[in-house]
Length: 335
Image 1 (cartoon, rainbow, N blue to C red):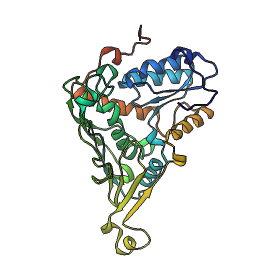
Image 2 (image 1 turned 45 degrees about the vertical axis):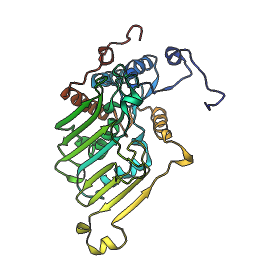
Image 3 (image 1 turned 90 degrees about the horizontal axis):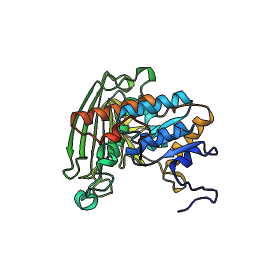
Image 4 (image 1 turned 120 degrees about the vertical axis):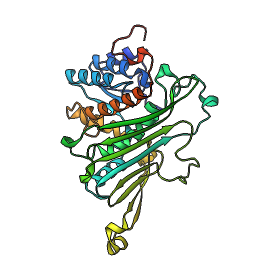
């Protein structure tokens, strides 16, 4: 592992959280452990950037937010996709009405796996003791695209949670974790004046979004408005290619064939060959520097709303994790 000579190892998470020289802790353990791990950091006065999904359920996220507020600490869910220049560009175009009133977004993140052969019963993606399953690990990215295009692009005062959540889950027989999940959301209003908006989020570990890894199957995300649509290529968690497909009948012949093409392709590469984690790290550093408790890019309320949607999906389909993962108790003895 490449790391600077100044890097310091710790014998336990407790030792790390107690170090007075540490300002911010990035929690990247399995999401089954996020609540306990983040609470440990907050109790020791540390700012926290916590991997998605924030926690196992919404009450846990709400409790972490409550503690962060009380202690005056920064806390953010680490959905790196939100901070990419590509995502910022797309949200900006939606807010400016570039594709008109936005009524619908489709988003998928799926991978084709020999689940029995590759995952068995102990892999984290299917292990219930680690809150395994497609929803919390992959589906969060599909939901991210629904929320950052249909919810976050509205003025903060106009953002309303979905009025309807409908879903289907198919469970992995060997463990009971969800292997395929489909979600339909209805929002009471949409971007650029749409009187409503619908979002379709799908995920599975059985079939792939991009089977040949060459994009032949089409975009992973489609954001559809009255003047055209924005398409984003797989993978939903770290896309680098997107396009605008304009509606010729709305644009008119001269405009459509003049200065702006009907189809406009974009490629946004990560600088220096980086993966992209630097953007959420930079946002965390800026917020801590400026004394902010939360980020405007992904604030506490929005993370809570998304967690409540996933809770409802699990409730509708009888997906329950072990009690020690769902509890608000902290600390859990012998955790």
